Image (tube, rainbow, N blue to C red; front, side, top):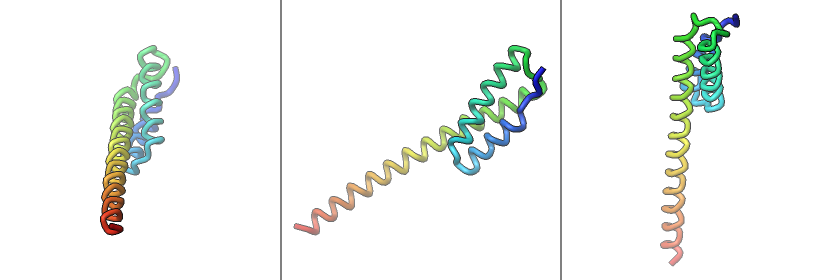
Length: 93
């Protein structure tokens, strides 16, 4: 039986949220999902189930937060870009 990697998944999930690092959050999500499947199949030690689930959930949350912040930044940049272009056009006339 393989030992669980719950602590690693949890640490990656926390790092993904705290530092806003999407690749780390995605790795926590994927590792957590994989490990939970192995725990369900009886291949991995079930003692780390709760820790693995928590890390996977944090990975999901970290990924979603990163995507939302990226969308907000892109919207803000496009709004300010349009406003700057509009201002420049009105000053030129």
